[in-house]
Length: 213
Image (tube, rainbow, N blue to C red; front, top):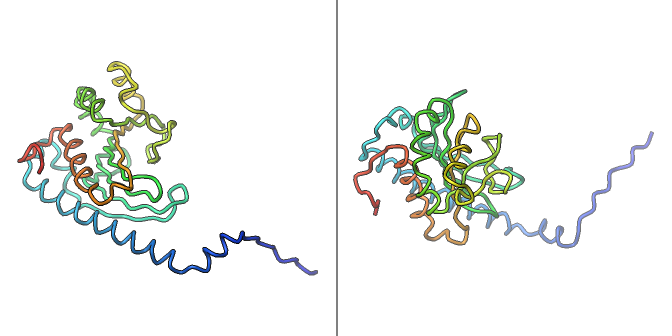
């Protein structure tokens, strides 16, 4: 029996891209640069944490920061820096700094289990600050979705204070996040650092320099 080979058709634009090795070399240079950006942030975060009064966040800060990468979050490459990064089957305390190709940089506080219970009151009390600073709250049952589509995040300013408090108790997890444009890459490090400090400050961490700069 003769098996007919599958015929895969490519457009002229796809063929041109396939023949252009510079595309992937440029992508690799970009990802190398983003990793260096995250490595600098990692060092700054560790230094800030060392000098700060962690309050009851000491145990959450014990695991070392970690930078991870992948090629396929909704089909696109990404890099993430997690610190703190306390994860187990029920309890989560993490601040995730993420680069997502073609979309944005983001900064996310992710709480679950005992950590959510411990910091829920502080998050609810921070409603005015979160609203003013343009933060979002996760509204999805799936805690591992990171995109800012309307089915996953909504701006805090769209909620009244009571509605925000109710949303905070909706699921076992709680996510508060913000995003920054990729075109701000040359100065986004300061924004990501400020968000990291802000999110941990809400949870009771006291930094030596309140402004951070």
